[in-house]
Amino acid sequence: MARSSSDPLAPSEWKVMKIVWQLKSCVARDVYTRAGQEFGWTPNTVRTILSRLVDKGFLKTTQVGNCFVYRPARSFTRSLFSAADDLLGKTVAGRTGPLLSYMLKKSKLTSEEIEELRSLLDKQEHQHGEGEA
Image 1: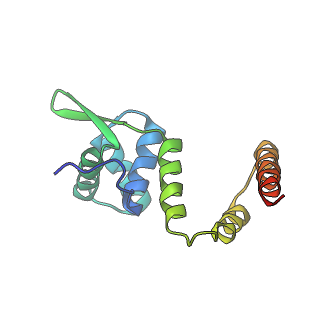
Image 2: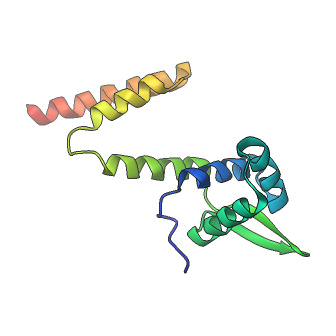
């Protein structure tokens, strides 16, 4: 049964997707070689995860000879935003501040990213301030 790409990725699926995003286009052997080296996974484990990712719509496949070539169906950024939306949906209304603060503390940001965040916070503060007037 095919599942929707709105289904969140499991931790093992994120690991496989990161490999595929890095390779851009690959065969199963490429993925299970890397996953075996990095995580100690067997080829069968990786094939199962690849199959789930195809079913969920995160990977596209093309058959070339007796191999399947895998390519991401969604960008890393789009998938990350979807995961963030899922996480934010789990917060209690009005309590996203602690989550965002925690994520900020755990992040290594460039100067440009910090400036973008400052701008967003200023804009948020300005909009919030207008609503109270």
